[in-house]
Amino acid sequence: MRIYNTLTRQKEEFKPMEPRRVRMYVCGMTVYDYCHLGHARVLVAFDVITRYLRHRGYDVHYVRNITDIDDKILARAEENGEVYSDLTGRMIRAMHEDEARLGVLSPDEEPRATAYIDDIIAMIHRLIASGHAYEAANGDVYFAVESFPDYGKLSKKKLDDLLAGARVDVQEAKRSPADFALWKAAKPGEVSWDSPWGEGRPGWHIECSAMSTKCLGDTFDIHGGGPDLMFPHHENEIAQSECATGHKFVHTWMHAGAIRVNKEKMSKSLGNFFTIREILEKYPAEVVRYFLVSSHYRSQVDYSEDNLEEAGRTLSRLYHALRGITPAKEGAVPETEFDRQFAEAMDDDFNTAGAIAVLHQVANEINQFRRDGDTEQAHRSAAVLVRLGGILGLLQQSPDAFFQADTGELSAADIEAMIQARADARKAKNFAEADRIRDELLEKGIILDDSREGTSWRRA
RNA sequence: GGCGCGGUGGCAGAGUGGUUAUGCAGCGGACUGCAACUCCGUGUACGCCGGUUCGAUUCCGACCCGCGCCUCCA
Image (cartoon, rainbow, N blue to C red; front, side):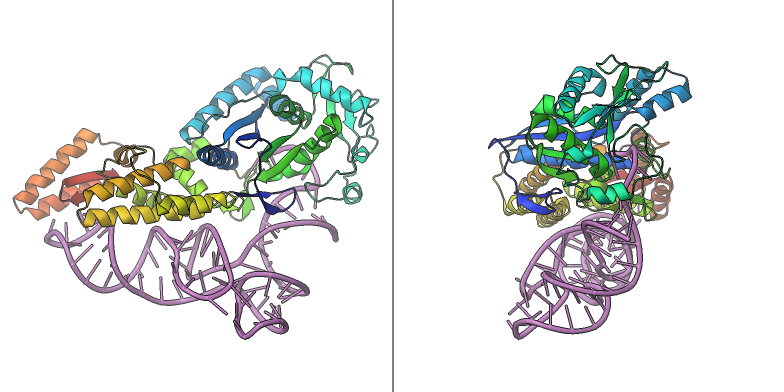
């Protein structure tokens, strides 16, 4: 299978260090606020990647960190008048709720920066000892960017350009404007840890170097994250890690595409972000997931009501195909041409859009079998659809659960009673009454579907 | 300014040197008491200009446009 590597800017044949084992690290959240859709994209993208790699038979060790100490966290806690760890604890719980609702499997390890202070200090120590970092007059420790000739190899930036474009408010203490903090001296009253350089806390980038190395070794297979982490975060990670260990840090770098709103990137600094929980108030979680998975993980996607609603209609088509069918038992149906096409798409840099097209072909086949009264074949194809959907984390609930959740003011019993009343009216050829009932339900967001087996219902 | 990514049919979104993406929406037909669902059929496409080629949406070059990073952001 081939994966696009940001480091080389091309798709490469994926060869993990150990044949059947994949070591992967993904930059997770800085927990000072609720997760937004951009976070969801990264969460879902690497969830699908993990699921597919496992489906392909790899033993994946997936590590995704939590940044639970940083300037923004301290600022927000101060603003709220609370202890920073109360804030981060609350946001971590919220994040776990959000990802569970989106069907995102937990990573194998979820290291937190504050639990790895010793490892961070040890790595900084090594960097100072090898001349790649220095303790400045203000108590901070900085990484000396010019000591690493490869600096810029991920983001394709030249150090000269970075220095020329540096902002005016350069830290006096830095030897070079491009140097970045490994350790920040604590201001009076700030939460801090003891270190050889005095009380302080880690810089933003060093935690990921320290934790990934600790959890996965000096060198590992895949490192992923959001599009805006490429520079400076990932660039700095490479510098720190390769200077500290003397080994290549990561083989394959993967970056998700940005989420946009009105042609602008959704980001916290622009203030145009939607949190996952806001969106989940308006759309079923699986629809949001489907929306995310229906385009390639590296492409930009636009968040809009139209797009989410279309995703809802499209996912409904898939669930419609499954309605009233008990899929054949997993394993009872051998691999089909559809499995092959699905794998072909996914093997090509996780082309989920192509894979979903296959899902629709399977749904179409199910509907054809059903039309022809070939129940046996319909059930077998349904098993294929559920099997392939599962690799993307989709189609794992019952169609009724999907269609009949969140019905608003009416209970299922109310709806069933009205359906019965309508059925009676129809039997009596009182179509005016039957249509009145159907319209009343529609007004309340309930759509009826008649079939030979009877009438079923779903929310609009 | 530097670096990078992209421009596909009404919309969303894959892909390919010559042959159907897929879905949503639309239209015609079947089914239906009428609808919905479903099935069958159907139209509109590859930013612009050159080049390579028997043939380019697909390769190469120029141009136009959009976006991202260069500062905390997934």
